[in-house]
Length: 162
Image 1: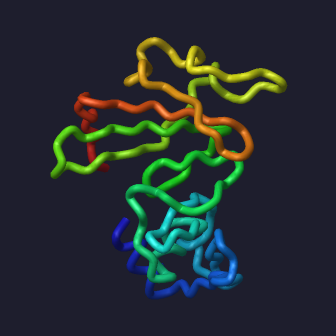
Image 2: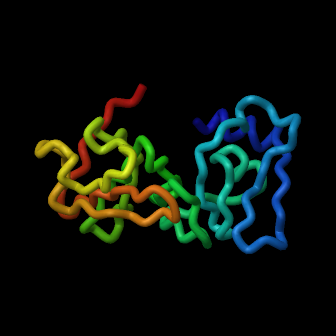
């Protein structure tokens, strides 16, 4: 991941629209493939970038707490990233130790939670075995409502590095 970010910084030059309050930085038409794709992230400058590569190329650090201005319809703020409310929810592990950071991850929605025409979604669509289901809540996105599940006082499961 660091190698890709370094390549992006070296190869991508991104433009932003500084006069817009919630401007999104966009890569130029000739950006390398590493800077393409839409996986929005929040920069410390309060701007939403199309992906981590374009943020780094623009010299922006990612905001761990989110706090970007405005909303992205159908996208759930989730730490530094945004989850697509059509297929993901935000899982948040709150640290009860001040020195340890809170972590946030986009997780795949169970099939029962995927959007259906004219049907309101509730936390009841998640299987009972879903971690931190007791702290499930809706998230307004300016479009399709999403979900966030917050885990407090629960140790985050370790994942094996690739």
